Amino acid sequence: MKLTEEYEDLRKTVEAFARDVVAPVIGDLYEREEFPYDIVRQMGQMGLFGLPIPEEYGGMGGDYFALCLALEELARVDSSVSITVEAAVSLGAMPIYRFGTAEQRAEWLPKLTTGEMLGAFGLTEPGGGSDVPGGMRTTAVLDGNEWVINGSKAFITNSGTDITGVVGVAAITGRRADGRPEISTILVPAGTPGFTVAKKYSKVGWNCSDTRELAFTDCRVPAENLLGERGRGYAQFLQTLDEGRIAIAALSVGLAQGCVDECLRYVRERQAFGHPIGHYQAIQFKIADMEVRTHTARLAYYHAAEKMLAGEPFKKEAAIAKLVSSNAAMDNARDATQIFGGYGFMNEYPVGRFYRDAKILEVGEGTSEVQRMLIARQLGLGDL
Image (tube, helix red, strand yellow):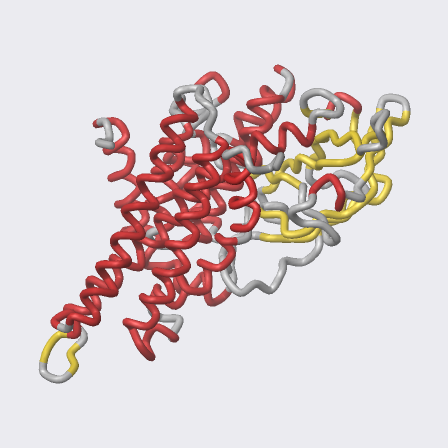
C-alpha cells in the first residue's frame, strides 16, 4: 500500500518529532520513570491527540489510520510516549466520541483532543483479565439521579497524571433475565469524592507511561454520566478493543522497526575480528529476519485499517495484525539485544529499553492467546 501525500507528510512530521524531540531526552526520563509532560504538551500542539476526531470537537478531522501512522513513528523511538497517545485517544477520547451524548462530547472532547487533558478507560480488574464479564466486580447502582460506584480497576493507563481529567469506568449496573451481568460505562471525572488513585506501578517497561490501580468507594456521579446505552458497556468495549488492536499493532511495528534501525547503525560501527560486525553473515541473516517480520506486520495492520475505514468487518484482521506485530516486536527486541551483546543490556542504548517494552505488547489489549481464539472463531471453529 502506497501512502497518500497527506499520510506521508504526517508520517514524516512525526518521524522528525520523534527523532529530534523525543530521542534526545527519553532515555533519562525512562530511567527516572518520569511522565513526559513536556513531550505530551508538544504532541498536543501538533494535534496528535485529536487525529481521528472531527474538527468541530477540536480534532484534526483525520482518521484512525492517521493515528496508527503516528503511533508507529513514535514507537520507533519510545513506546511509553506512543502508548500514552494510543490510550488517550483509543481508550479515552474515542469512546466519548463514538458513544457519548452531544453534551458529553462538548464537555470533554475539546480538551482531550488538544492533549490539555488525558482520558482513561477503567476495564481490567485485579481479579480478572481476559474474562471481562466473569471477572468484573465493580458495581454501579442508580440512587435517584446519581450513580454510586464501588469496586476497583487495575493496570489503567493515563489514570493518575496531573492532567488526567476523566476515566470511563465499566461496571455491573444490574442482572439480565438469564443471570448474566448488565455492564455499563460511566464517566467519572478526576477528583470525584470516593475515587482514589493509587501510586504508580513499578513496571518492567513503559516506564514513562502512567499506569495505576483505581478504587471507588461510594463514588457518586450524575446519572447523565452514563456513556451510551445502559447495558451496552461490554459491546462498546469490544468495539473499542477491535479498533485499539490495530493501534497496538502499529505501535508494535514501530518498536520492531526501531530495533532494525538501531541494529543497522550499530553493525556498521561495531568492529570484531577486523571487520564491522555487519560483514558477517550470521548478523546479516538476523537483521534480514527482523526486516521480514517488520514488513509483514506492517502490511497486516495496514490491511486491517483499510477494512475498518471501508466499513467492512475487520475483527479477524485486527486480531491477526495484533498477533503478528506483537510477535515481531518481541522477536526483534530479543535479536537486537543479542546483536548489541553486552551493550544491549545497558540502559544507555535504546534496544535495552525496547526489550523491556516489547513483552507487554503480547499481553495488553488482548493477549496473544485471545487473538488466536478470535481468529479461530472468525474461521467458524468456535461452534464445533
